Image 1 (cartoon, rainbow, N blue to C red):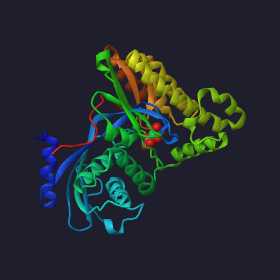
Image 2 (image 1 turned 135 degrees about the vertical axis):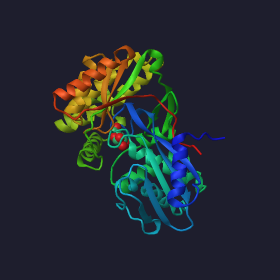
Image 3 (image 1 turned 30 degrees about the vertical axis):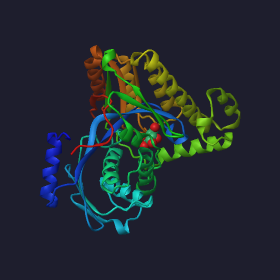
Length: 387
Ligand code: GLA
């Protein structure tokens, strides 16, 4: 039997009140943090994210026509109604673009998707760089994949959600976030090779090493549909083309000396971030296996410096969060996700947790920044059916 917690029960009864029928089921998918490997996914490189214990839940019922009705528990736009028959990329607003986008992407892959009624509940903070949008997409696509009998494998669902993001929502993102949300597992980080989607689930148990992973949400909101993300991606493509490789994945750290003679300064720094970051992911996986989480701090720090100085996607709030966390007891810290805002992570000994929290809150107040939200995360299960 599937377990029904109170959030699931609440969602089911709210669905029944709203739509006058019982949902076909309830599905959930998590947000993610990325331990290391930033802006490497669309360069066919390596990433090491994990699914977090914050999730989007959807109660969903297929309809016999092509109408879609969408409502969330957190207000937003009220009930949104659309028709799958005339759906075009760019339609929908706010969070409704995510369910509409995956329905559109599944249809593009030849899946017969009928209309549906959907009620969403989510505790993944919005705009915090924890992939709240992918959590919604992954919950919906898991539900539709099951209810339509499409039976697509996780790798195909990953590509369909990427298509929804790229072509429907208009954010030129890679495959990391949805891979973590769909393929994550409790106690594990998802070591993903973005060239062939091979996954190794790597044990990541901070607690057993006397550590916590703190997320510091800077409250600086960002959008990957803005120009910054796309321009970094364009620099990487230019770098790969100039160096004559399929993707920056094919450039090694030793190749950077020659690359320096071929690339302009900005492109070189963008390339250097990606190349060294790929190397740091591989080192992190190795250090985790041989020595454990307490030894990855220097790699997290180096990753942040590379994003701040070479890739230039950090911001004052993220830098302050990282520097303050390190100065007050964290053993390693870095911004996580696409950048330009969102969250930092700080790997912190349990004994120093309160000290780090207090120091970061204090530093933000001193700098007259909006108060950050600080919480811990642990690797949790990937997308699944709840009821
Ligand atoms: C966002 C994107 C991902 C990835 C990261 C940066 O989260 O959705 O595909 O590119 O930024 O690592």
